[in-house]
Amino acid sequence: MSADGKAHGARRQSARATEIVAHEAAQFIAREAGKDSLITVIRAESVSHGERMLVFVSVFPVEKAPAALAFLERQREAFSDYLKQHARLRLPRIDFLLENGEHSGGPGGIGHG
Image (cartoon, rainbow, N blue to C red):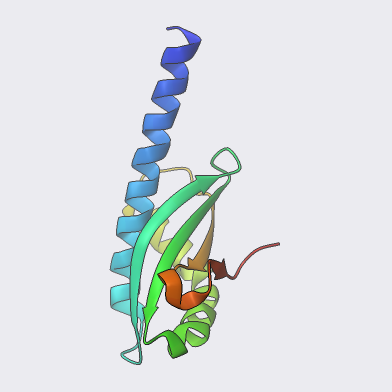
């Protein structure tokens, strides 16, 4: 296989992994989150050559975003355990970030460091 073919296959695998993580994050959040706010998974993005996965969420009402992000940070290990059970992939570090469009003043989040 050519280098281009290998790169294309890796991109396709990475895209599939981001789809799986986004889907599973939505399932996990729906099951574990309280009713104080609506947390919606927007998308996932693989960074650092697949070593990290960013999961972008929106929170409604916007005022509940800090509490929702704190909840997701506390649940990161539980979500990783959930992924091990529900997805067959090499697990990257998961970070949750807020993406509430124009209401959030731009992307922001937790877990950077």
